[in-house]
Length: 114
Image 1 (cartoon, helix red, strand yellow):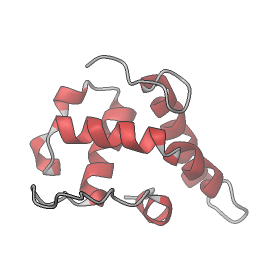
Image 2 (cartoon, helix red, strand yellow):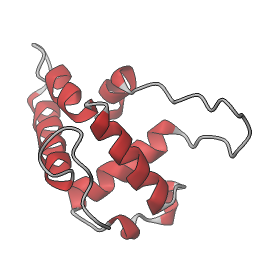
Image 3 (cartoon, rainbow, N blue to C red):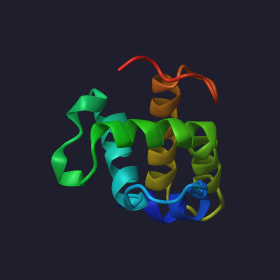
């Protein structure tokens, strides 16, 4: 995945659960790929293919978390650095715009209904 190497460096840290337990956190790269699938294809969250290894609920929850962390804006800024290939800049901008449209066009906005 082309955007993952950029996103990996700026992904927010997973929140620690003080009570412990629960199920193991899914792989960030797989969840990121499922979120990108929905954003780029403009599919509903419920259409996340099972091949990503994540549920649509997990993909949607992580999307909201990434929006709150400002990841999409950071990704676009990172891709805009000198020396970044134009296709990478294009995809970072396209994903940021798609995320803004899904998130109500402003950071921290509540996600629209499923």
